[in-house]
Amino acid sequence: MNFTKMQGAGNDFIVINNMDNSIQLPAQLIEAMCRPHFGIGADGLILVEPSESCDVRMNYYNQDGSIAEMCGNGVRCLAKYAADAGIVDASKPFEVETRAGKIGVQVLESYRGVSTIKVSMGSVSFETKDIPVISDKATLLGEKITYKNQELTYGCASMGNPHMAVLVENVDSFPIEEVGPYFEKHAMFPNKCNISFAEVIIRMPVIVMVAKTEMVAPPMTHCGMVVSRAENLGTKPAISSTTAAKPKTTRLTTVAVLHRMGLVGSKVHACLSGGDLVIELDGNAVFMTGPAKVVFTGAYEMQVPNEEEALFAALREL
Image (tube, rainbow, N blue to C red; front, side, top):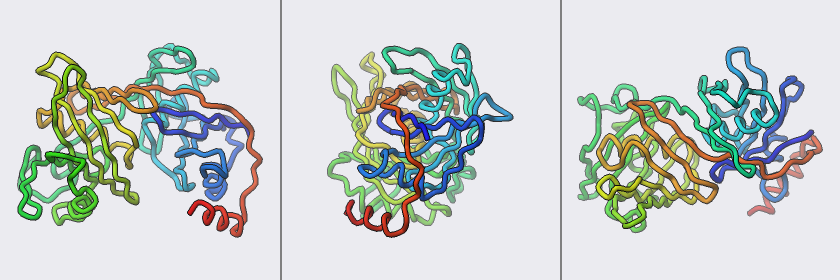
């Protein structure tokens, strides 16, 4: 089975052409393929398939073989693959079918093997009833909440999952691992909540937002970010992050909340190890522009590991 290993802003994916719908991959095989060191190694696997409603379909699976809705970085990789293979007409915008709905995509440019692709990530809601969060107020932006006698400012939003962005003085010293789970299970969030912690600073002449991410088990995420405000300095806000948070909309939702709270502009640059991202807000619509590139291509022998092999592989990784 031929595959293409691709990466977008540091997230890597195994991309496979399934335009003839001939490939059916069991979860155990997907997990084996995505396993670092012992397989190809990837954050997820994408089957490129035909669509009855869009130009192409993204059949996306998590690293553990479970079915996933979509991933912004993955959509860009699929878009580059489909464009390079002639599956779609990259000279104009096209649509990708995902389990999360239709995603608008546009290939802006390609240079030395790297394609810059803009993806419509959907809309963000700040309405408490949509998040959901229990409150008498229609929105919660710039509100106060107390944790162990410390008053914190926060804002809430949703891009398909509940999110809370909390402002702190220093993300490096703030007890993210302690406070994150507390807010995640707070009574105000009936369905739990993804939590991010943001520190607002000003650095000259380059404005940088540095993220320190603390990963927890899905579906909830706690992450810390350092955000720079740039409007008054005549430069564009930027973000630098070393890891990606789950779910994939965490960074986007955080930026949307900070924008509504007046802390960042409507266009935020994210400087990541895998390439720069640009997050743009137009009303409640959120767009993400970033790179996608081919890492290598190859062929994989389709052999599902037995339980004993899987057990020994897992033990070797401990």
